[in-house]
Length: 93
Image (tube, rainbow, N blue to C red):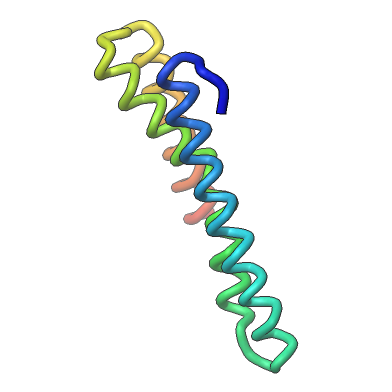
């Protein structure tokens, strides 16, 4: 990984590990599906891939708050709030 702002590095690490975990769990799920079970495991892997960007946003938000960069922390917080409302609305409707 190249050097850069800490928020970029933390977001990259969060995305990287969520991607690795999601792909690994999906692969296990596909093997289990071939054996006749495991659809839930594959869906968990897909969920991990979806949650990766949310983890990246959380990592950036924490870093910006630690650095007291209130303008961009506020922007990230608004984005997190919009994302949370969207997820809630999609769950209930």
